Image (cartoon, rainbow, N blue to C red; front, side, top):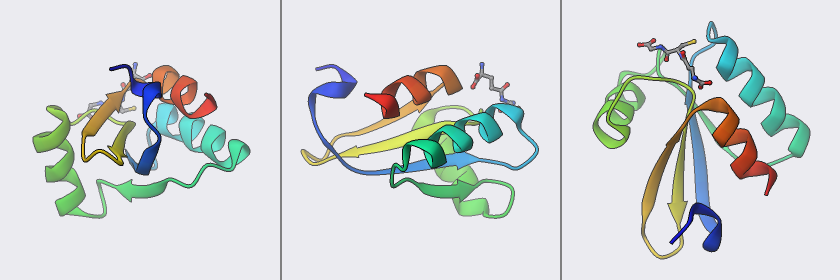
Length: 87
Ligand SMILES: N[C@@H](CCC(=O)N[C@@H](CS)C(=O)NCC(=O)O)C(=O)O
């Protein structure tokens, strides 16, 4: 299954303000008008540990994609995130 084959139930973006890749990604999200919950890992330790545990590393930005079939995916790399939400 590829990322685009199922409709996401919900999406959240793990980020922090000082990261330029996050700024670029959040601008693209805003421009596209996609409903994505922002999760600042510097302001919320739970978000930080969820990112490390779920995604496998503390790199931002990371898009958590929850599919309607219950599957959860963690998508790193700003260019891949922007490509995904542009589809
Ligand atoms: N190629 C990545 C680069 C992302 C990146 O370098 N993010 C930095 C923050 S600007 C990061 O998460 N560094 C690891 C850390 O802060 O622990 C992308 O485009 O998303």
